Length: 488
Image: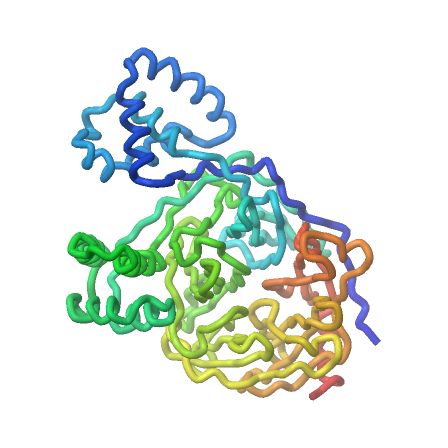
């Protein structure tokens, strides 16, 4: 018998009108030709072309002039090849050049799903019983490219949720590449990314044990200049792509959370950022950080990565290492256990594993936690976000895949002191797609990337066949009692 859940009467839909102004670049030769054409225009002609552009697109983007300038600045190496000094070009000509290398991208036009939920760092100016929450989503646009988008919501003392309407403007973060790389870990990831072994060996011989991005970039450029073979040049370029997997991103302080989008930056995530699982992490000294595990995908290689933030304005991004940092479905526990970080994973695409580490970036020795037990999850079992701490154990919302590739939500209970021990697992699904939820971009799927407990209820946001999201609510104690009864 299934537990009584409340399907909350609220849905969050994508907004195809939400567009981001992206840098567009096809090839050096075409870029050179285009720049030369614009440089050949008279200044008054440039002015007459730019002003209507600014008037039209300033209504669709925050500070479009800044975007055009930034995109023009990205072309500085091309200007240098053409022996043109960027500083000598007028502002309007820079804006016009930048506009030719800009295109609008609708980030939510194809699909919108797999939500995760955490408490907002800002809990000011609320009435008694209210809590401000942040919901992340996987949004898919043209070319099936996934990004992370956000909505803010308010939940009250009765667990009623009000989702704040999204803003009209979307802001792309400034990317900061100032990392210091650990050569051993960097080369380990290069091997996992299937970069040519001979190129990796050359990197190993030429770089120090710790090196900066600028040093790596110069090494790659020098190596490419000495190469005649285009395929070898590409392998050196992949080394630079890998370095882009380590970066920081900074959003403007005048943006609302719904204005911020985390878009693929590295070539190793060029096909998307998938299924971010956010967790509010409490350090032993009381400090709070927010982490998110996500999957970077380039069309061939899956690379698990970690986001870290305190305020949702500034994020650090890095790959995860180790035998356990494979495949998808990594979910971090919200605090250390026995002085160790803990993570649930699904390294084989079928079963749930658990692993522990002293270093949040390195995950080895995954151990089997759960295998599919019941027909509704025979194809695979996985987590639906970070475990939730309760008086009776770690509560893990799971997903199971059964006949006709139908996804359902379930739940498991892990021992508080030793979460490698499963002490409860629902025999029946917690949630199955109903007739109103089974049609969509990917039919017959309900899926979540994170939940939380509020006022003695567990609140689970979930994607509906990848076309929208909704919420269910369930008494926590009722679920715990059933889990203890359905002990494995």
